[in-house]
Image 1 (spheres, helix red, strand yellow):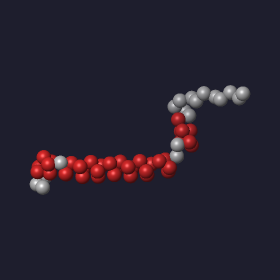
Image 2 (cartoon, one colour):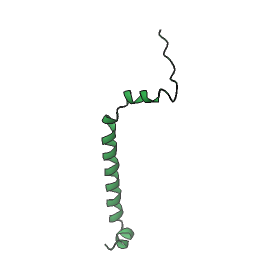
Image 3 (spheres, rainbow, N blue to C red):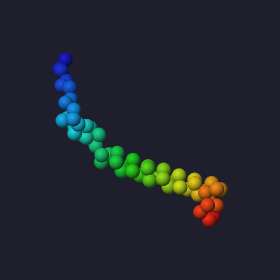
Length: 56
């Protein structure tokens, strides 16, 4: 069986981006964080003490 060379960190850290492509995961993660922020704010505006604090 062929020997797999051990990575030389940090010189070989860039190679992870050949496997984990940001074009695949960056936009879905950013959109999920945005959606989570919207849902959290909507929840806080429906809770009575926070709603009364903001004049609702």
